[in-house]
Amino acid sequence: MSDTIFSKIIAREIPADIVYEDDVCLAFRDIAPKAPVHVLLIPKQPLTTLGEAISRDAAMLGHLMLKAGEIARQEGCGDAFRVVVNNGRGAGQEVFHLHLHILGGRELGWPPG
Ligand code: AMP
Image (cartoon, rainbow, N blue to C red; front, top):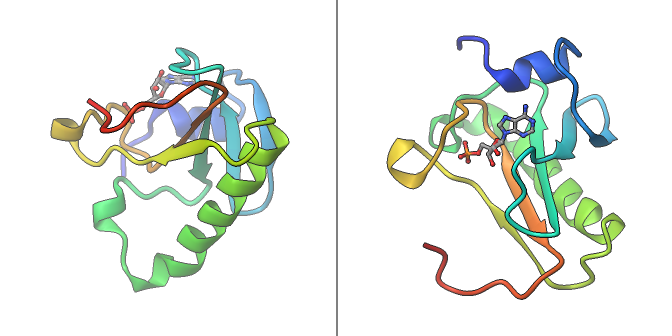
């Protein structure tokens, strides 16, 4: 996988507003937030897209989902938040390093565009 802006954030080569970090993942505020709370949660081990995940990635993916809930709570979203993964250009993916968008802090309409 080629280097993305997110690998540079993990390597601290470019700055980010980090809200959570552990051995497996890193969470930081989206530079162009779409909601009052908009945090990106990424695995440190790069994976291009969710669609390319294999069974070996199961523990990492489960970890990300658990942490997404914790981060939403920590950010004050209460029980109203959304976790989004854009997979592929046709779905709006721009950065090809798997990331979960954690959105909250406002009414979230459905379906998303
Ligand atoms: P996606 O379109 O799902 O690939 O989402 C990529 C997200 O990364 C977008 O919401 C961007 O605003 C966000 N983004 C791009 N560069 C940065 C950065 N340097 N720091 C934080 N967020 C970024």
